[in-house]
Amino acid sequence: MSIKDKEKWNQRYNCKRYLYGKEPSAFLRQKINILTKGDALVLAMGEGRNAVYLAQCGYNTTGIDISKFAIRKCRKLAQEKGVYINRIVADLDENEIGKVKYDLVTCFYFYDRLLLPKIIGLLKPQGMFILEQFSIDHLEHGTHGPRNPDYLVKPNELLGTFKSLKIIYYEDTIVELDAKWRQGTAAIIRLIVQNYPVEANII
Ligand SMILES: C[S@@+](CC[C@H](N)C(=O)[O-])C[C@H]1O[C@@H](n2cnc3c(N)ncnc32)[C@H](O)[C@@H]1O
View (cartoon, rainbow, N blue to C red):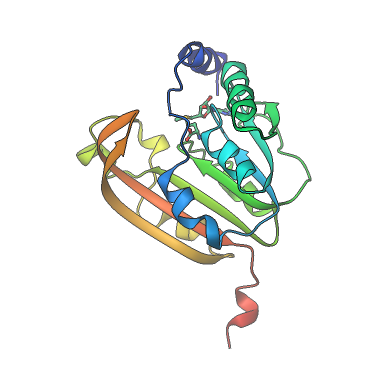
């Protein structure tokens, strides 16, 4: 990530409007009851829609983002909802995430192939990772969003990256988005994996 990218995100977030809304991702909300409870880490958390929701659901939540403006908006949203988020401004491409382990790690609409394998080491036993991101099919079907293949998930790619973990949920699909902040067609991947000794269970 270059300084230019950091500036780009700061410029985008330097406004009153919540670019991604204040409501959590529908996928996160749908799956909340099966996710491991406890300490959560929200990667590239943006303005905090998912981080604040997790805190409201009882998670002890930490969020990281490269943009100080996004982090400020997250603080405001957390105050509005009466919860606390441990907020960190950091570049995920350049910093080690640390040695703390989590019960839940989330990554929504931020894709970094070098970061993904490191997430496995962040999970406590039984800890889960949940992701939602545009797939490569988005180039054909998407009406908005990224066009750079570096940021688009290839078919079954994540099943390989997380093959040492238990796959709890995997979906490669085309959806019609119906959020207040975004409508249109999107090709997306949804994934939940769990740090569970997969090989021990193969007879
Ligand atoms: C498309 S937004 C998604 C925000 C949030 N995950 C959501 O779903 O509302 C991508 C986010 O990634 C953050 N980001 C981009 N590059 C980053 C990096 N290298 N390190 C940390 N955060 C980064 C941006 O600031 C932005 O908030």
